[in-house]
Length: 152
Length: 155
Image (cartoon, rainbow over all chains, first blue to last red; front, side):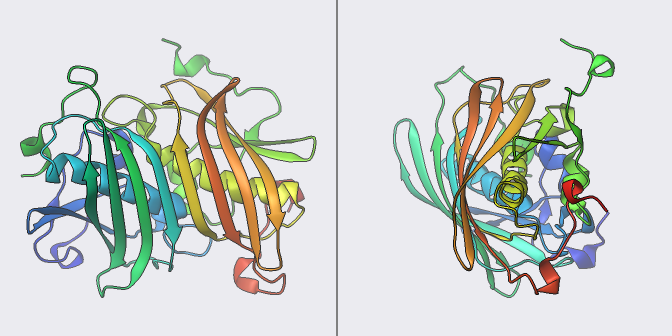
């Protein structure tokens, strides 16, 4: 379990009902001017053969970051399936580093949402860029996600 | 619902033990097989892979297809080097369900002096769950940072 010194100020644990995310966390979050920022410290189990964050982990963080930002920033309490995620890996995130994600909602249509995402290190170094297309399911089609339960 | 204890790994597949990877071991078990000069990764969707909708998390599929691109390109183009991913696009066509046996396929489209371009798919039977385009860096054969042994070359 990370000590307080491992988690930058302002971040709190996110309580997400997603077994895969729980397995690969712990994911932290904070509110930045009404926007959702996720944070994650890279541990050994997150790494590839070069001891840097695995591409799949970064894609998972980007997927969660864009996905949950739609819930949080658009105030939608429904699971948002990913249609397409395009990720460019710009620099490596070394073991022990702290990664943060930020999402811009480019357009929220009736059923489709377009997003941009940036993953950075604490010092602002750009790690990865993501572009996402998501679909908003019809009400009742998928389960509810209660924002207050996840982000408290 | 099938009992996990009754699950048998389909014929031809063996555990994939990529050297030194924390992530792959952590999200596994992952299997592999090589047939007709092509490398395939595979896994069965289990509880620890799930998203809030009870389907296989997109991040898990992305993780597997990321490695599928590297492994599949190493086998398909006879490279045998760690291939860092530069860019990966994943289109999610269908969700993976708990218990599904998901198999990866790679088509190497082009190998240049410094890059590998591939297409990859994750499939259940003949259905495509995920389609991916991958661009990887091709390190120099002398670059010691990227040398590693894959299961198929033997130790």
